[in-house]
Image 1 (tube, one colour):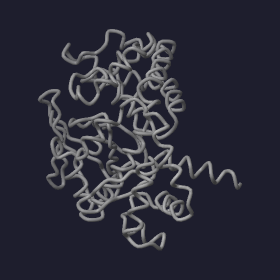
Image 2: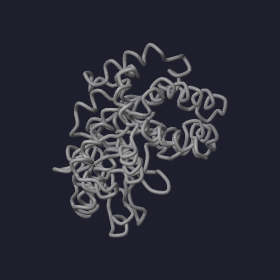
Image 3: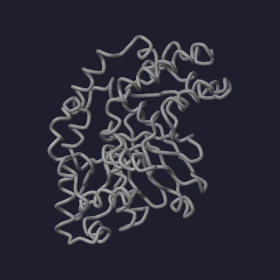
Image 4: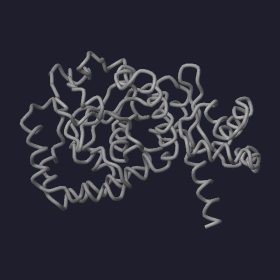
Length: 340
């Protein structure tokens, strides 16, 4: 399939990377990855663990999120919020909206692989069962790994912002997913392996929302009917295969972090962590400026923080970019709470 997204100057000005991962988008990507047969080395352990934990209710929801092909857009909308809030929004989806979504797919032939129970989604009781299944899927597929997902998302977003600073939004579109996405100004051309159909989407001043995802390898997912602007998911951190490989490994023993965390009990290092939290994506030189240190000292402190799991560091060109991890943010929040 070739999907062409048409931009105006106003669209380029409003195109951005989402500030945080969106739970239902990530859940849909994880569900597809669970059933896929690619990326086996990277996701095999996670798949094996997850499949043994799925309840019958979770598998009901899984039927509507196949590894490839159509999935109801209203159960994977790119919206911010807690998983519980978003699932309740799905539960409250108006019947007419569901019918409209189904009308776009049910008349198609058998190649669309639409589940036999799809028509029952207009039944509030059955939709409620599917929503219960979404919650069960989230507890197995996402909840145990959410801090790693957020950290990777933050790191990728920092890198993308650097691309914008150096080359504008067009550079961001060029580098987001060069395997599947080609920028041919003023059109972003996207190729997916599903069929030979061609589509055109005119943004009409709304811009495009970019969503990095740790679950994807190459094929983007286009949320063409998302509000208030269309969105597209693309692989996060494609240049860091080791990080992608270990992101969904079993949680490491916390004892391994004891020594590095103990090394953080100094005023200077605490100031470095605070500066990174206040300026996510900052370079080592910028960090040194914020804290009033030599660049070499800032780099040393950042190394200790990274080894403790309190920050993440990625490289863009020859520059190291530092962002706080969820553990680091939690540590700062807990410390601050004691003095409130």
